[in-house]
Image 1 (spheres, rainbow, N blue to C red):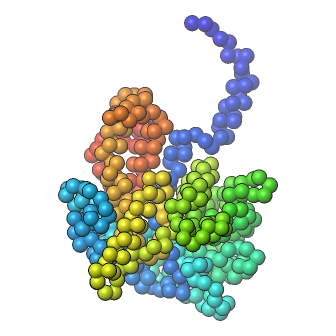
Image 2: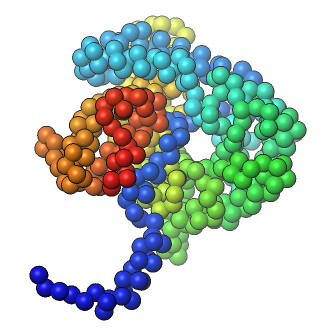
Length: 434
């Protein structure tokens, strides 16, 4: 074997080592990117409607929709347009039924923007104060979601004063009620819509820093989500990518990028008939968001709304039932499409969508679980070399995709950690070996 004196490359190697340490593109690090606490959905509700009974009402409506839609496993199979065998149908039905009956709501946003509308200052002042009081009363309750926050108005010239006043009234109201220290409220999410420049993000971060110090909260009590819904967020007139500057300006507080379907498509001149979550323009935008999120640690992407709602009809006529089933199946298909494309959280408008969300997640996980287990175990058994199972080739990169799948399976609540153990899967050991 020919010998090569690597000392001649010492300077080059040192430069490469430094650059590689600074780079954030390592696949193993990014494989852990989808936060294990990322909820499978976020439900928005107008601030004027928020009360101490909201979470209970949401849970009841979700369960009502599930019972109306699928009284048994076979009905669920037919409703979703699937062809599962009886055993698979029962497994999906019972897992989804348990989730819907115990903890259907994972994330909730008290909305002071589109779901609230334009109201007088007196009205919004009142609703900001009452929302804080009501949240203080129910935070930590059995049906309260682990993730909760508010969506303020945009920090544009037209909305910034109102947005900042609402935020101040809400945060001060929580502090006065002692909800932060005396209840189960461990963190609060502030959703910023229609972001158009990095200064809006930086300003919000600075204000939240001040609130944490003023009210003696731990750093990180507040996190932010950015709703990306304008073409200018993706490409600046100077050729830059503003979205990257938004994340940089968040100073580590940004936890998620949310996609605004309707504002984005209307900005592109797309007519109302074409404004849907599966439009090609929306696919382009979400991919861009995924790429941007991959460059920063622990930032997830949430899909946009599905505006076609499967509302339980007041009169159970044949026509009403058919409309309900059509809307249900449309929601199910769109949610399954989002999951396949790596959008593990979606934005819901009504409690009737929650059962579909949980059913889609259950199907997505169970459909792939056994095959994923076999592929990962084969890869590990072959000492982390490239392998194939049933014609599927696996190398390090595809195994990272399997790890993402198992992480999400546990995070969504479909698979319990004990089921991974029973299957002989040790995710920590696999990551260490890689």
